[in-house]
Image (cartoon, rainbow, N blue to C red; front, side, top):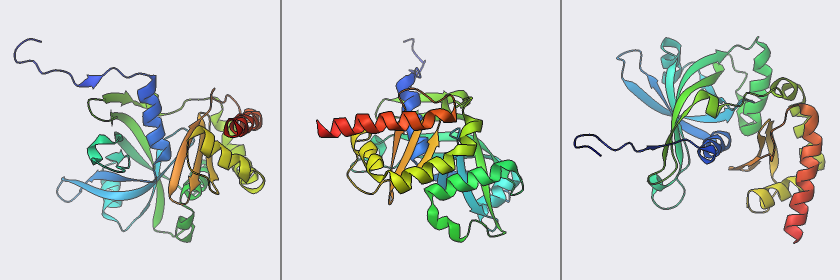
Length: 256
């Protein structure tokens, strides 16, 4: 390295980095949202509860009375930091900082029913206020992100690496809700086995909260886990055979 030239600490983005970034996105329940204060142009950070749209874009539900909503309306540029610290050094745990542009999902739009359903699936208690007139769901459109996977593991990712562009998105939008309701009502044992076998999570009454082309999301109280499919879905018709195959694999894995 020549004198005066700093060493590039950003590693080449690989499949493992993309998988980790998507895991953090899908599993997050909350994050720190930084907006631009319209009064003085200074950065302003607040905590928000998060969910994801079918393609992985973050969703937030905010009050029109909040400071960050005023900031988003004045300037949609914002950033979201996600990743829970866990035990020990908080800087040793993976986190993802995403530069995004926020767009309000209008109540009259075709997309609103979908994002409302997905947000409430992750945050059921928000049903108490999600339909208040002064509350709105915003979709955060990722532009690029910085993934810190731990010590000396920094990666730069772009929109195409964070979001899922799949032919299955449209068909899943119409069938995801019924599939989730069926699994939660009739196949609680399979959901528990998914969590135990694929995510090495503890036993419990795990609930299915989301199905997207890349995988499924499960929740047990405040705990969440992300499980990726072996092969991404190309159509909603693949949901049932994929989940059946996963149930068989999980059952056999736990029994062995």
